[in-house]
Length: 236
Image (tube, rainbow, N blue to C red; front, side):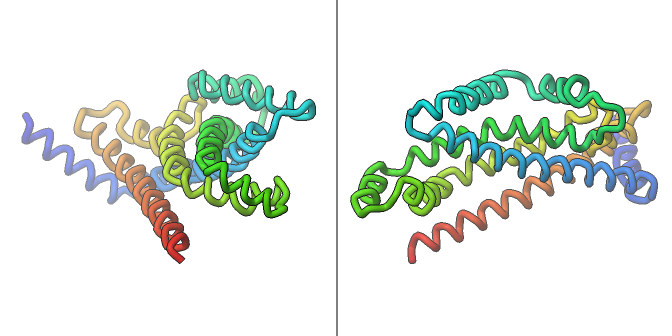
C-alpha cells in the first residue's frame, strides 16, 4: 500500500508540472498571494510606523485622543482572530458589489500587520539608550531632529529581525483568503486535489508548500542581507 501511495504521489507530481492548466492556476494563485503579501506589508509598515511614533510622543492635551485611538487599535487587532477581521472587512465594511477582493484583503492584512509592526518599532525605539537623546538635546538639537537622525535609525536596526518575522507570518496568514472566495496558492492546491485520492491530494499541497517555502526563504535572505549591511555601517 505504501509503495502504491508513493508511486501515485510522484506520478501526480509529474502530472501537475506537465499540465499547462494546472501550472497556469498555480501561477495565478502565486501572483495573488504575492500581491496581497506585498501590498499588506507596505500598508502594515506605514501604518505601524505612524502608530508607533504617535504612542512615543510625550503626554500632552493634543495627543490624548490620537494616543487613545492607537491604543484601542492595537488592543482590538492583536486581541481578535485574523479570520474574523477578514470577514468583517469582506462582508461588512467592503461589502460593495464589484469592489476588488484583492484590495479588501490587502487592507485587512495590512491593518492587522500594522498593529504588530507598531509594537515592534515602539520597542526598538525605546531600547535606544536615553543618554543619547539627552546628549543630543544638550548639543541644541530639537526633539524632531533627534528622533529622526539619532533615535529612529538605531531603533530600526534593533527591530529588523522582529519585523522580518512579522512579514514571514503575514505571507503564511494570507492562505486564509480562500475563506472569502479568493483563489490563492492554498486554494489552488485544494482545487487541483479535490475529490481525488490521498496521493492526488497530497501532490498539489506539496507543490504549493514549496512555493511558500521559496518566498519565505528569499525574504529571509533579504533580511539577513540588510542586517549584514547595517552591521558593516556600524563598524565604519
